Image (cartoon, rainbow, N blue to C red; front, side, top):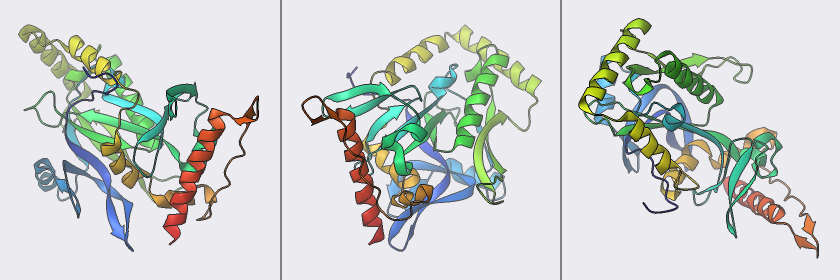
Length: 315
């Protein structure tokens, strides 16, 4: 295994609740009230629809509001990884990834661990540059039990709900999370921040044609069949854990550029009421000998990148 390369679950396609549209010469994210299932191939007009998308759309009257799924792993944190992430908006590379306690940050000396105060308390995160970022891998096709579709989100509602559901389903199924027939479901809600406009988030539930008792019985049946055939779910979970822990950052530039376009647009400079003006570069703190500290240099560099992006968005 190549050291430093994060080995992620194989991906067959993408699931989203929004799309990127071109408006006034800029490519901007646009929220939607339905799922879209795409392949991994992108044209000038956007991501190409996966064949599954057409079938589910016809079955549900034109809009996909639910997707039958299974999960690959029994461990919730292997199916869904959520972290605070600061991306370089030019290259798409993650610069800093943390969990609210500690973080891994790219520096001139390599990847260094620092305390992570969460975006609200971090100077690097000013201007909405750092967001919660989650990735959920699900099985859509029974034909490929080791191939997944990925759903990415920066929404607190989806992240909070998915984490809770996965842990609850693991508990009530006696650690048979990967055997449960489940459903990815779109839900809507209004908040004070949305001014009464519905916002949509993703949930996981039992399938609409099954009760919870039927779902658990099916999981026991599948688990028994797998054990009889020699399917080693524990070894699969362990292999995934080793692969995900093999690198410091899960996303590379190839995936990061798509993430930047969808979740971290240049117009993000408007977040926090800052408008399109640039933000002041933090004053550098110094070490003995009047040399700027490493953290201060990183803060200044990150703010310079944000200012450059904001300046470009005005013109």
